[in-house]
Image (cartoon, rainbow, N blue to C red; front, top):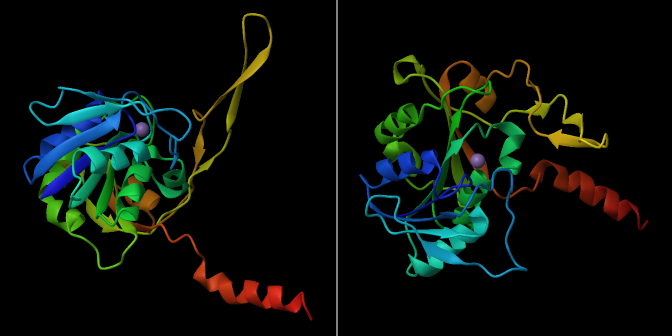
Length: 257
Ligand code: MN
């Protein structure tokens, strides 16, 4: 099995080390990842500056490159440089934090998997999901879970343009309750901005480190992780709301009558 691994925390992050450790047990792995952290870059692509690619040797013999771009750039560069004949699987992660609910739209980790399926390759994004900040991240738990559930998540789906988004609770492996295949939930940021003052008394803002408001969401990815289950969500990049097509078409038609 030919595997391309990327992430959004950068080639030198801890999480990707653990993902490569599992992946190399199941196939031939090549790594192309950003040269630094690109978290929350979403599905961005670099088009106005040249991409620089540098070999890195932090993966114990695995061919690997760091790119001054985004996860999307890394997937495409990986297919161009490492797997010009194509590959069988794109893995993105292990992200240092959850990618639940709407957060998948901001996530560079998830965007790596999106770019994989756009290229016609089965793809999986993997995150370790602490629900409070400051915890030590249990990549060992993710690694073990992924090893034991490898076939389930890496076997291509019958639906095209669909990737698999996995979030593993940040607990000891013995405390995992199991796994649930669930739809995306909501993840709404309660206080988006924190205002501070610089040394000259001018206000500035920090975004993103705020309290999160989720509420009870049984039956969703957030609900599963909250209850101690690994969440597994099939995500499609067909963003069309098919249920709204007729309604919208009806309105457009009526404009002309
Ligand atoms: Mn990240």
